Length: 173
Image (cartoon, rainbow, N blue to C red; front, side, top):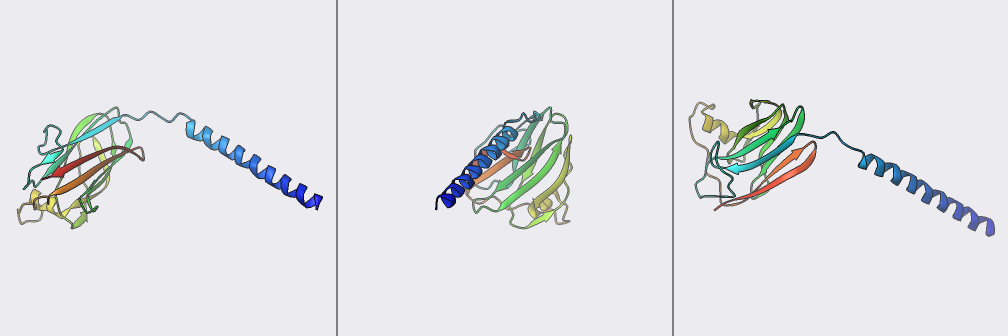
């Protein structure tokens, strides 16, 4: 019996030692200095160069994500806008180059299509854009307007370097 007990203690001791070594190695990797990314921020507005807004009036048809960035050579970002039901209104991934300010239009539609978006000073890699945006831009040949945003609370998330960087809540009354 003593041999079994001693063997179990030895195995348990080895497992504890291995756990400590793995934990120490993981902590070193987690605490190692990462490359310093540039500065990226955004706000929501009802105009291309508008001020920050968190409340939009009933009947609003276009809301802009005003993206501002500096010293972002090759920085990867992703912007996701959710409607009150949790559905995507915008899912945009891009690589930023340099510094700039970009207004990104968001319209309301549950229909989605994929198409490239050309953004000055940024290379877009993928984007899901509402079909209503095409209608507003007259690209569908119909020249119509997007529908108004329904009342409710919306969420815009900015991911920078693969991590959630900023969140803005905004409401249509």
